Image (cartoon, rainbow, N blue to C red; front, side, top):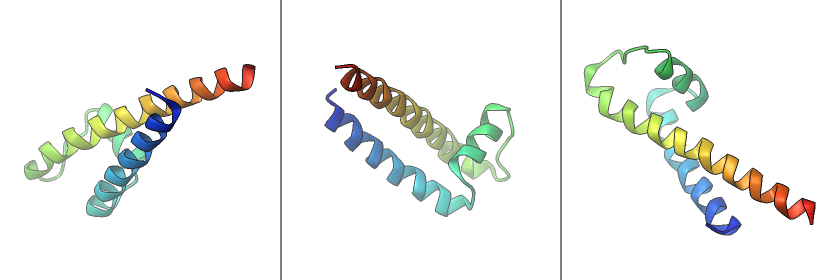
Length: 77
């Protein structure tokens, strides 16, 4: 992926994260920490959303790392 494609992906993922944050009233960082520690959703109807939210957040973290590594390469030149 090019830096522009990665950045575009990051922005799209951030929109998805914001939608979840608005729906559930918590920040993605807080949600993800609870999710990986094994906390269960209050309502079993939220399970699918929480799985998707965690997946989007993991992808967002990966794209952030991808972008930072490309930035580092560009600065080294």
